Length: 301
Image (spheres, rainbow, N blue to C red):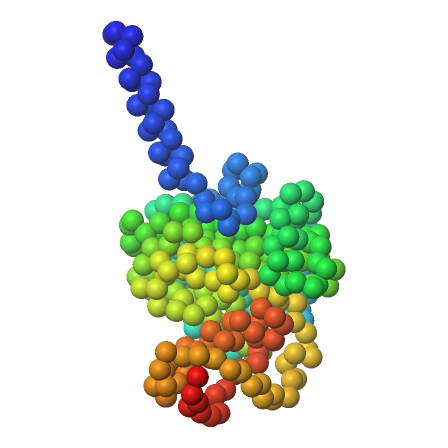
């Protein structure tokens, strides 16, 4: 083989390796995960598989303190017991379990992908979590002292090849405060029932990421957000009994819509209120509070 041919062969090999590496690179919003980050990998493939994690630090979720959680194959976390349920229920469930669902659907790891997790009590991940929470919830003077990262990396939907989907949930706590970050990478169209958000016992608090119960919307999750970071959703979740006993309040808000008819059609009204609630939750509105539109008044600009 001539020196020139040898050079070209080496160049092509390096180029191919570069493409593989690029294809496997996670979005920048993802926290470190996988074997490179030292994660524990869940290699089981059945629906009924759930990994029990004994938490290094208690996590408070809407007034209830948990010392363990289950990472369930089908894209959700539970606390009191594992869940093999692959047909997700739409929030609010009014059930007996607290649920965190980055993307609850029928997932088959035997087809593709891995599920992994890791806890942190020091290091750069805690620094990053502190910075993120201080950015999204300013004024709390928050410092993270514990983080759990659970990642579904390029997993496939059951019975549907070519549906590689990546998402991640990050639990963060410090002092008496608790937060959730949900991160989305590339997501395939959901052919099975899907649901993303969280729910609580008796649904005293719950949140459904808008559109997430529609499988055709799933690819748009990587562009959706409530914190102005595409692909990321952030929630404050320590809650407490007081937030569920709030008296009804009337809040006056001025906003502009494209046409008066936007607020005369019930479907548009629900969409507007849902987006408005997302924004208010960022600034401390308990997500158990429901917004109602009492009157639509047309005014001149």
